[in-house]
Length: 237
Picture 1 (cartoon, one colour):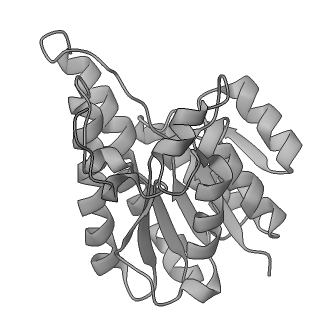
Picture 2: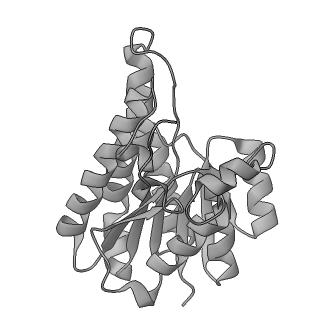
Picture 3: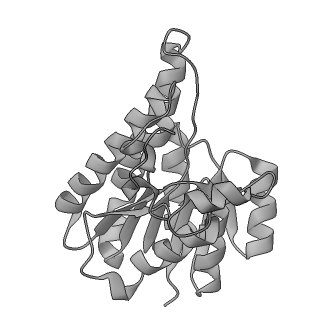
């Protein structure tokens, strides 16, 4: 039987690359995104099914899982990729903005896992969450984003313990991944111990592995995809 994957936030960037890789590997992919035009276009290109949904809202999450249960009838892989950032000084960051980031980046994963639990258990499936190296290191004015991604690491291993052994849960934390704009400069590439800035396909390849049968002994773990930057000692000039 064909495996089924749900990828949230897959209209653009890393999420789209993940959806494309999973589809290329023979998985039936469902894309959920609030950007209806881009989501529908991505789905058409990839050969996926698109559902318009705002992952920060519980009713939309419940509708997505209900749709998969009704149409596909199973769910093998849940990729929680949707995320936003509001970059502002803490004095200017409103509670509503804080709550929106937390709802989108963290609470949605709890709600998705809870809604999809029965389908995932039945399929002996897996969840891959997409956090960030910002869970370990920060730049100014990113309190909500850092808090959401740090919380996601803890939520990942909590879910792994609660849902195992039927369901595996792992986390991928990307670093600098180039998805839009001008090509990285030579000095930006050289800054990375791997010799280049990351690509969305780097993250997608790891997600494909973690969602597949060869990753059966991996659960509750974080995998950092940053070209070695978080291990690099940096001194001031």
